[in-house]
Image (cartoon, rainbow over the protein chains, first blue to last red):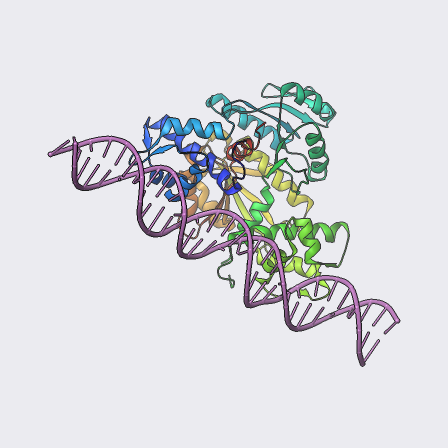
Length: 213
Length: 213
DNA sequence: GGTCGTTAATGAAAGCGTTCACAAGCCCGG
DNA sequence: CCGGGCTTGTGAACGCTTTCATTAACGACC
């Protein structure tokens, strides 16, 4: 990418801004928005909104604000959401199935949501050939073959903890560059591969801290 | 709690340390662990491990390290995990069901995992009285009544986006103090109520940023 | 019992991320 | 065509988080 060292904190807020812009343009059809209002809706200070966007260019007009549809398009471009992103899901248990349905529903309802689960994998022979929401479940051994054919570069990992690292290693070897990991383990991956953890237990335990009486 | 203003960043790492300690004491039965090793396994620098723990007391011995089982118990106490934490789940769609099964499985396999979903709520009359993993689904209108009876103070929200805020308001009114929110909206809650967001779409969009070629 | 290697605790320093504050630029009304 | 009110973009200040570096303490071994 042409922007070198953007911090994680900044990147994490971009989808938030994008969401606000999409809501506004869909529900209200408004043309302009100030950093003040964008910040309020995203739960961020106006100054931070401006600083975040400034990393990528000058998108606003002084005295006016940001043009909603233009900024939206720019953010989508920055986040690589201007082209379709194909995702593989590994581990089709009840969580994996739920996420698949959830994602497909989202894609169906919002045709600008360009991140789509297009392949499912599992190691249980009972599941081979079964479908979830129209997507066939393949043996994990075929992961590389199938994902390369479909140009998949992102994976969602919903396998048991003791298999997560092995699955991640194989996925990385097959060219996966970003992983959303639901397994309760810290995945070790090479430089250049991105992992986001969605660790339910950790979040619950963290919340418990604040439950003193 | 007797520790006043511990930062979120610190609290977020405590469950990580706890997990490492539990793995080690279960799998290896080791007695001692240094901040060096604890840090390595948790993905954190040794100095930071020591600083984090120092907020709550002096748990280690110089020249020796930390006693695994002692530190584990202390962390569990700090995180309020030394007593059972009862959770209500609102919105029993496929994601809600998956999370319920996932949680119950966890509780079944690890009897020290003290955070348990004990009540399910939905607004769909078709679901009233149905069970997921032995837990009955109740109308959301009975939320306050049921949760007060069970002393529930944490809730998981897996309802559609347009109902999330209303559900959160009602939950807070019923005494809920911590919410794990899966709906793609920024919940507004009063001071003193904690929200953790598990927003799948946001995470996927964030990961997409790193997928440039 | 003394020495040496190891490790926790901790104040100081460095590094980051956020907020502040202001100059520059835009629009509208007169 | 000019003035006033907004709003962006941005360097500087601030505050929070992490790392560094030192001190003090423990245990094993001779």
